[in-house]
Length: 102
Image (tube, rainbow, N blue to C red; front, side, top):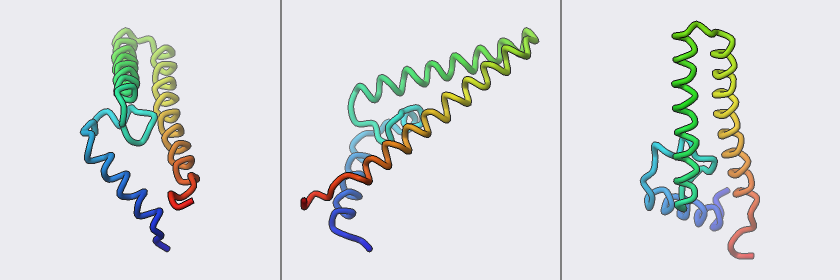
C-alpha cells in the first residue's frame, strides 16, 4: 500500500539523484547516493584502489605469477562484495526510519 511517507521518501530520493550527477562514482561509493564531498572523496579513493588492483593483476599475469594474480583477484572480488553489502545495509537502515509524521 502506498502511504504518504513512502511518497515523500521517493520524492526525496528523486531530488537527491537529480541534484548530483556523479553516476560513474556511485558504483564505487559505499552509499547508494552521493550527497557530500566526503562521499565523492571516498568513491574516488575506492575507484583508484580498484584500478590499481586491476593494473597489478595484469602485471602479475604478464610476469606469470599466477598465485599473486589469484590473490589480487580475490581481493578485488572481496572489495566489490563489501561495497555491495554496505550499500544494502544502508538501504535497510533507511527503510527502518520512522515516518515523517511521527
